[in-house]
Length: 153
Image 1 (cartoon, one colour):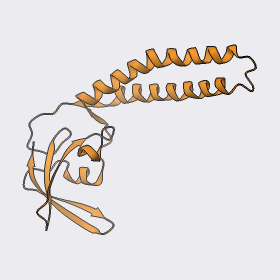
Image 2: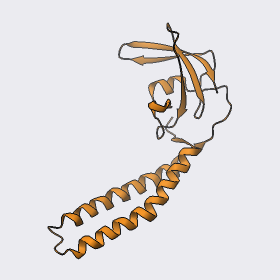
Image 3: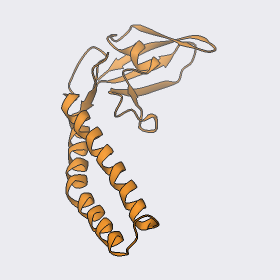
Image 4: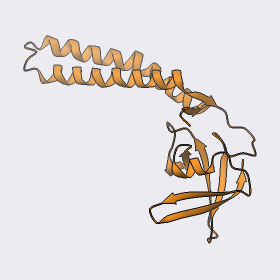
């Protein structure tokens, strides 16, 4: 599971962010640097040092986004009978009646608040490759928890 996966939507979002950073944000930082240079002595110029720091952070983020977009595999949501990237899996913890649904996504997109779990997380890894009716076991500090897979979309 060393491969990084992203959904088509996330690829679009990251591409848009990269385009914005390369055009608009770079221009803004260059303008800040030019202004800061015009203030004089660079050794004690807080505006200049802040602008240089912002420029470094921006270039780091641009490199990170370019790497993600270059190396990630884009997956589209599709109908499947196996728990895989893009699938929504409905599970039930053994011994309870509570049901939860999670979408399996790559690590770049995991977001528990929106029920998106990474295929590299303990639960995601336990669910990955399973079918409806299977049981997934997750080791936790309090012991092993078992989940029954009720549905996969």
